[in-house]
Amino acid sequence: MQIICLSASSFPAFLQNKQFNCKFMSNSIAMSLFDSFAPLSSEEWNQKLIKSLKGKELSSLNQQPDPEISLLPFYRKENTEPIVLPALDTNDWLIALSFSSQEPQLLDHILKALAQGMNSIRLKEGLPTDLDALVRAIYPEMIEMFWDNPGQAAPLLSFLNKFPEWKKGQATISLSSEEREKYLKEFPSQYRFYLLQKKITKGELVHSLAKILKEIHDFFEMGISQGISAEDLQRKVSVGIELSDDYFLNIAYIRAMKRTWLSLLEGFGIEQPVYLHIRAMGSPASSSDSAETLLIRNSIQALSAAIAAVHSIELSPAHYSKEKIAFGRRIALNLQHMYKMESHLDHFDDAASGSYFIENYTAALIGASWNHFCNAVDK
Image (cartoon, rainbow, N blue to C red):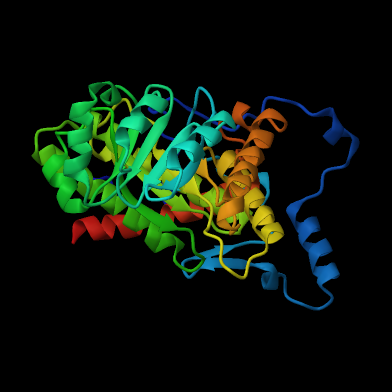
């Protein structure tokens, strides 16, 4: 497989490739409000900033979220290239919650969350002891399952063979790398494999993005060696992102991941790319966090993930006591209902498009991480 590796300086031009049927930032809508104000040049903006800094250098406002990335305090249209992202029919992300397979009254908790609007279930810490009851209560063609059970491939396959109707729905499975290689062809064709989960952390952005790309690349290589086409393999990929507390960083990171995914698919000769399956998760609550602090954090993280457009969002239900965990889960669900039903964020496929700062942030992450990925492939 030949990966097209370009330098960071030439990469923005590569982003303008239109073969993916992508949407560009629209400039056709004239806003009469702007006609009421005299335009200011970038130099005039710089002078106003310098004056307000009272002797400090303008460069003191620069940000460096990663050793290889430096961001200016503001950007204008003349130094911004719009990022090409795949167009979604809808940004109707799934609302997910996580459950331990060992928690008491598991089925009651799942049914209550389903009644409150959850439509993606993550089961971890093994398989439930009463799978039969779970089967009778859930319709797999309507609710997405995430089987987060590395080391449980054989029992999960046995379950699917016992209840073949569960092979019809959408599901994601988290297996060890050895299990993925061994059982890749055994699971239903529409099942996705959860390849890895990365936390968005300042200082490690470029390297973590490159590692995600390398993991996906290696998965493709492994699948192709087993006779599976790249066209089919792209539908089997799922990655997890643990969100940070930085609103703009989350958006830029996810957008960069989706754009480099398209470049990776192009390297494998895929002419009809599909959207990258991304599960966004809120950061886990710590014992020092108050419920109010976590609610603010969840709000920021969910909003940034919704604007960046992901497949599903799973928020932490706070560190409530076992007696109040159901209330914590309800708050985590209602927060996303508010973003859908009141803010209508699910009606926009790339709400961040046109933000000069986010566009440049995204482009910087794309160029640096792509170079690291190409170097890793060439070794």
